[in-house]
Amino acid sequence: MWIKIRVTEEQRSRWHATAEARGVSLSELVRHGLDGVRAIRRRHQPRSVDPDLLRELARIGNNLNQLARWANREKRAADTVAVVARLIELDRELTALRRAHETHADKPQSVV
Image (cartoon, rainbow, N blue to C red; front, side, top):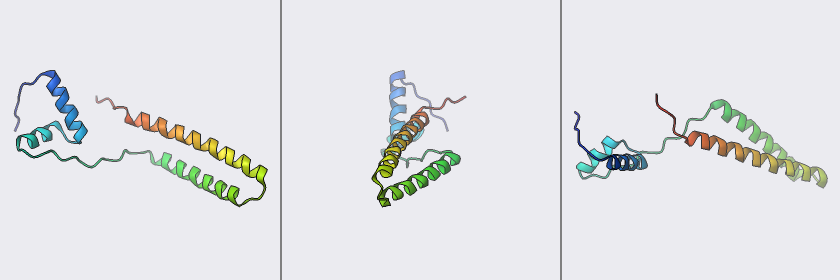
């Protein structure tokens, strides 16, 4: 059943924002509000991630762990310093990649 009400554009925007912040639909927010029950927040749904990206990141992580173990085990300081420096550089690159992916994933997708 549909119920129509008149609201200002400001009210509509505010209500939609409140519903989105609580993780519920506008209809659910209104129903719970009118029934005197606070709309419960739905569990956050994890973002879908490309499985190929996850596999590649897992491979990179495994390689990094092997290099880190080697660097901690070796006695040759010069080689160890070079490997640790490269590990730090890779960590920075992976952090930038993660941030770029999160920024891209956080942008609203247009609905056609």
